[in-house]
Length: 88
Image (cartoon, rainbow, N blue to C red):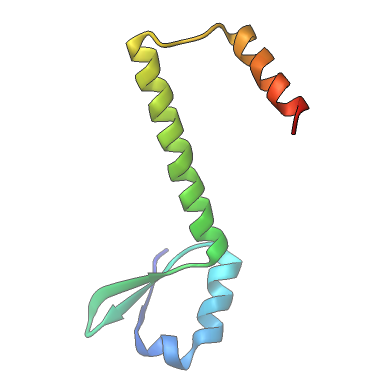
């Protein structure tokens, strides 16, 4: 369920808002003069979203390569990955 709060809550109830964001990993929507203005979330939740976007970009790149026929044999690719990991 959406948690929608007025902007005054940022000033008056910051600790409560912070605790809710960290406990639920969900955003809190902040209104200003009765209209949507901001979204507040924990850093962990934000980083999770950023990581998902990065993964989606890589998946889209892979799908585009597949459509172009730019693909490799699975076993060959795994060998290359293992070689890289041995040097890490």
